[in-house]
Amino acid sequence: MTQKTIVEAINEALMQAMKQDETIVMLGEDVGTNGGVFRATDRLKETYGELRVMDTPLAESAIIGTAVGMSLNGLKPVAEIQFFGFAYEAMDQIVNQAARMRYRSKSRYHAPLVIRSPYGGNVNTPELHADSLEASYSHSPGLKIVMPSSPYDAKGLLLSAIQDPDPVLF
Image (cartoon, rainbow, N blue to C red):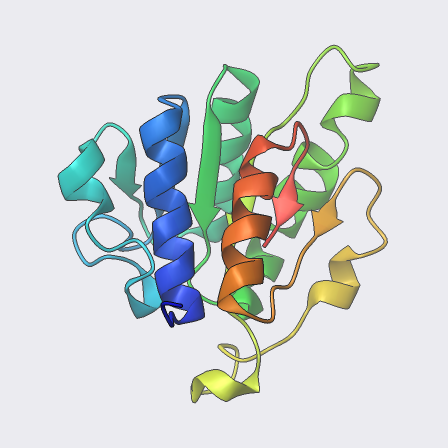
């Protein structure tokens, strides 16, 4: 059996999903040219092009706001926030826009998007980069939260999250 890291499994899941579905797009800070945090999006831009793998400004609220708009217009965005400690900057877009879209529109609209972000103290980063804020989001109706603990779980959960019709924090 092949041994992989969680980051390698995430990259494999993104490659596989984007190959199978042209509506999947990736956006976030440094996800294209630099390959994302810990290189989780490595080779995606070269493989799928700049129209499907987009670097964004350092503005988490804009990243998630853009992803919500994309999701309402037929795309399945995977938005990366470099570290989950910065998710507060996008809390309004996550909780009040993406998570409530189906309820707010009486199921007329869905926001099929994934917000992917590393978190936790084991990433050896300074303050704000290691925060585990998932409990702050766990009480939001319409929002799912998944936290893989192995490469196998990471790949399977990410592929499932991308296919979910509602937003998922990964």
